[in-house]
Image (tube, rainbow, N blue to C red):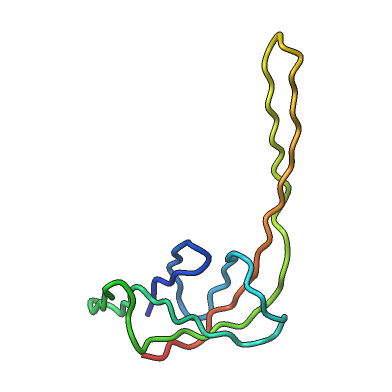
Length: 103
């Protein structure tokens, strides 16, 4: 069984027991959260598609860790103009372990 969920402005295809990194969710490590924005649920040949969300379907997930992705270096330069700009970015994430589906 799998589902397509929406969190942090992105969509993820998840199955039970899978670990995913999503945009940061304000929750403590070790707590259970419920993801209620479910777009689609599929099991074998049976597929339920929401318009846009499925009502009454929730997915429980456990927060494993909070962290930051590796640094991305941004470098801008205009040749012959003596212009250089250095910038870096590290995006925060929450690692989740997908638990049970309640349909």
